[in-house]
Amino acid sequence: MDNIHLLVILYAGVAHALEADHILAVSNIVSRRKAVLPALKDGIFWGLGHTSTIVLIGVIVLVFKTSISENTFSYFEAGVGLMMVIVAVMRLTKFYSERQLTYSGQIMHGADGPGTEVFLSSGIEDRNLHKVSYGIGLIHGLAGSGALVMLAVTQFNEVNAGMLYLLLYGLGSVAGMALVSGLFSIPFSRRLVNSPILRTILVIISSGICIFYGAYVVYENLK
View 1 (tube, one colour):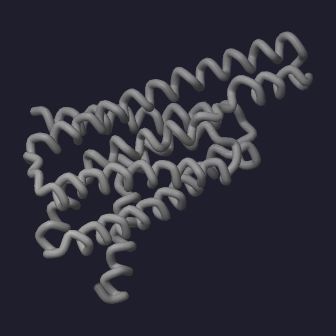
View 2: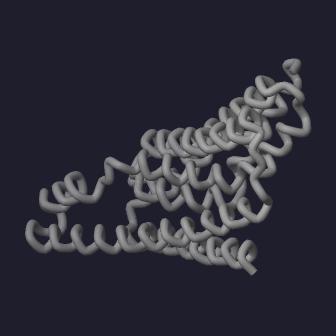
């Protein structure tokens, strides 16, 4: 593969990260962040999870010459839709809990007292979001790996070339999701959104769209 082919593959990976189901799922993760840098890391972990699954499927198909039926990948797609619904519902539940906890802190210490920040910094900021992002990427990789691996099989005669293609594609998806996560976290950042009402509206809208789109994906792949 020459440099042009390598750039095209990387670009395809970046473009893949911009698909609606990826953006909706990750937006429900990064909406918990109050700064851009942690959201960028969420995107990187999502991309790494996505790449891990694609490479694993690639090894199974390219190296071990194992075929996977098209129906199987349809079930994978449905699983992604279900995951999107679950992630969005969990986001709404978490957001409601945060609101209740913050309100309790304001009552105990006053609206501008130290209690609010104590509650926010200790319980609300989820330090395991990177792991969640990686898990979401793993599942998304299952859904998107079918056509991708088949393309590698048909376009490249050598296993090494096919695996290189998948790795480069995965690298592009890592870069793409880092970019998307950073951009989508900006509307939810504390510096930009000081209004609790506006923040609530943004969370409800992003989660609601994710639920409806996820349900649509499930229906389309199981009907």
